[in-house]
Image (tube, rainbow, N blue to C red; front, side):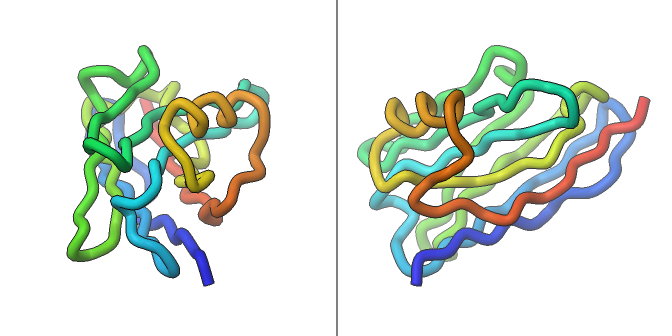
Length: 129
């Protein structure tokens, strides 16, 4: 059974850090691109990042570049989102997802749907000012 499970969300002050984890089962994390998107109440869904299956290249939306880093640990079959210098506008529910393809396809789908081949249940990140 293919499954993604996020963890690591919480409440943090502005300027703080959090690391989100996305543990995969049923497939290996280096076989398909895995990305993160976020959804805040009243705001447009935003694709945050993606890590490529083919070469490990990473992609970020402009609002998080230089602050967020996505990586993967093949031995733990887990993808991470390290979030530094957090801002109140980063407050959202964060989801990891894969569509069993590449980052171009996944990042495009982040803009149009919340339905993917596999998607986690989401983890809340709240940044206080």
